[in-house]
Length: 255
Image 1 (cartoon, rainbow, N blue to C red):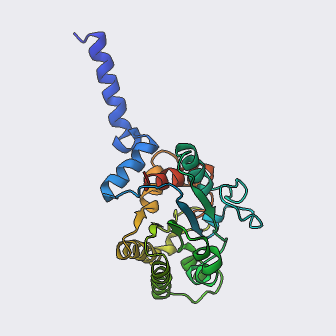
Image 2 (image 1 turned 60 degrees about the vertical axis):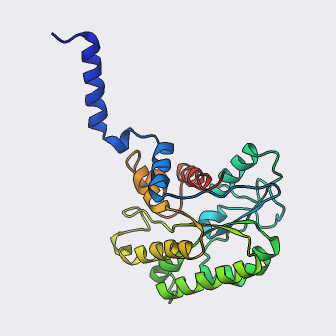
Image 3 (image 1 turned 45 degrees about the vertical axis):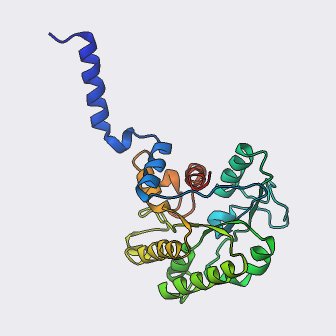
């Protein structure tokens, strides 16, 4: 005869197995598991570090471009850069961190290069985070852009070579371009071509000894907890929840 305690244990086991292992994991646990699989090392933040977020609209997130000072709420926008930056300032009040966001909506790699002196090198960052690539592919579909995967890869390498030459002690973080298929702007026609941009970003991170953030895997695993549109309303731009997902992942790269 089954005791009450045995019945409760059996019911709990059935509940867990019906949800599946990934479903049972919390979002922070899921992100941590992805990074464990990647065997990612972390950047040790130092006193007086200057942290710069660079990229396109995902990084821009409606920031006020008239404001140039670090650690300013409006200058950091409303996305993952603001969320990650605010957490860093909260966690490390004694480090005198200076955090900038210079992402600009619509940018591709060659447009980063055009403004790199003013929006990157002149700030003398000690930690540089770059998320770029979705427009390098997306605009070939919608904006008559003639870019190719080779242009993306070569432009990105050239940009980082120039950056490391001028800032040899710089710590680099490279985010993986991501797209959630079946949501508004993104359909099956994106793949497998877009995967080449993701792989290029990963290869470049390896080449420059940068910490790599596997955003695609993180978003895909997050969809086991909520639909894709919950995380990225058009398949590219993150929602509030998606921005927090990205910020949490970003924070896994530093200590």
